[in-house]
Image (cartoon, rainbow, N blue to C red; front, top):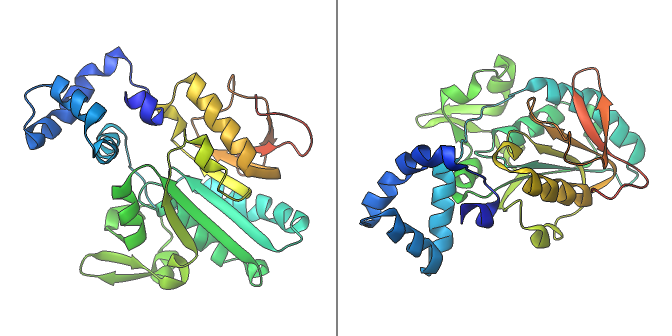
Length: 266
């Protein structure tokens, strides 16, 4: 049922993990068994809300600012100059897919805010996640000290304000990013998104089996402009998934690029 809802694949080996994570849900709902929870998810009017809560419990949202920062160096040092040469409408669109609590999207915004060549550009950064809970945190923009474990001190001082609840991101960065709820297996809704120059999808497809990975990559291919870039997590690759992207060996990272001509995302 979870797989059909959002593509998250948990095999039989995960049974004890799932049971442990969902015990509190049973207690909170007053269910006597997992069968009661199953029928609740199948027939209750608010089943979509409960599904979102369960996805939260069964996936990991561990993230922090400037995580895998070599990809940000690749973005600003190598990808950005190529986009600037190709984009005549002076618009840059970047999608952080599976953005969790927003650190990745805001890290991208901060990195681009440091680039004077974008001063008169329209920069649109969007973050999406299936979880409303993590999106609420992203929109609030207040983070604990643990979120800054790899953040350069000068960036934290420049773009955050300390307050009792943590560190609040500066409005100059916050207004550069918008967040929305999105299920990556919902290809029909994806057509509402504009074509992107860069898509970040890091440490997300590890939860998908091969058929879902193929569907998600096809969707990304459709949502990227010709010559656009796809950046995955350091342990993820498109091997045996699709040949629609070219593998690009940059100085700071290995990324994928949509072929400018031909290719179908198969």
